[in-house]
Length: 117
Image (cartoon, rainbow, N blue to C red; front, side, top):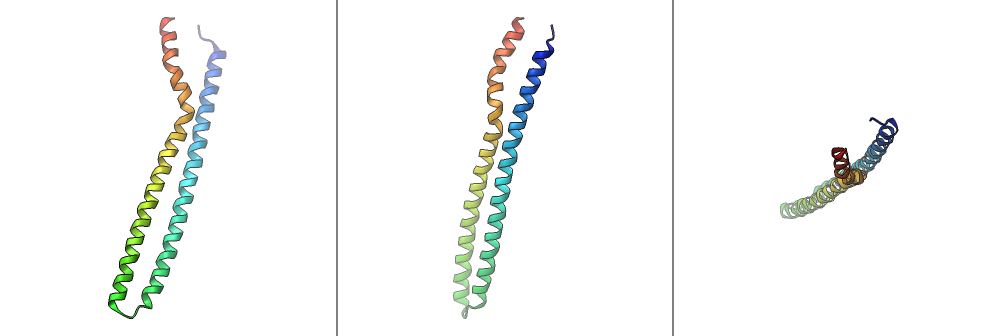
């Protein structure tokens, strides 16, 4: 027979798990957005500083060398930042799933119990 108390308890547990998961996702997305904004600001500042240096160069060879070094540093910085943000997304997924681990682990036993009844 249907037990309303059990149903109420299960729905409360499901809501608690969903709220915890949503909270973890929100914190993760905020951290990623902050990291991306910080990187964008730093990248813009580096670009402005590079342009200032580039305008003061007297020879074409020096300008070419300066541009090459800037592009190399920009590429390495971007690759490092992309790796870091990728890791942050992986951590976000783990943290968002963590509240569901216990209920998912209990599910097979509940199915067996229900099937036996």
